[in-house]
Length: 115
Length: 113
View 1 (cartoon, one colour):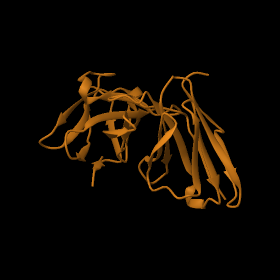
View 2 (cartoon, rainbow over the protein chains, first blue to last red):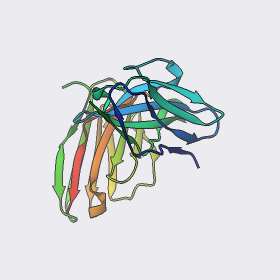
View 3 (tube, chains in turn green, red):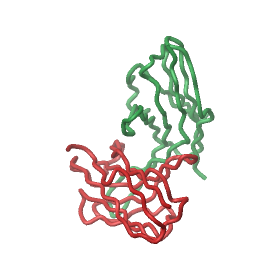
């Protein structure tokens, strides 16, 4: 079965410290992976996707196919990074000749950055 | 209002009631989704509609009945729910293309008494 695991439900760091949110997946083939974030009183939104190889708000994530991991990292955490973070493998599906994306979300990690 | 909107934002209903959740997207997307977010479970995909056609039903009980009259609107009809169905119900939409991004609504907080 395809699964995604975020082993840490809660993660606390101090401002300026490095932070790493772990994500491991078990998917056949080569999934695409996303990180979604939900800040307090805001809606769930995309943070970054591995295929873009971009850094958003100082966060990066590298897909490690050997370890089947997609950990989210930031060298210097800020208080405004406090939020719930979801790792989400993306499965590509076809229906009626049209493609669409299906996300499977991990359990989420609540990150708290202390001043 | 732009983006993905959901109404009502809060709903309290008894187990014998019938109610509906509404989702509307103003983004020109072709795919729409219903998710359930419970306190102790990961975000769960319930239904997927692509160009108004249901393409996924993730083993959801029949007391949840989706409806998609057009690409901009999605409903979730509720009847004879159970207290364990209390949760945040999120709607999302995407273009329906490969490598797209899903845009989420604010959710409807449902409480079943």
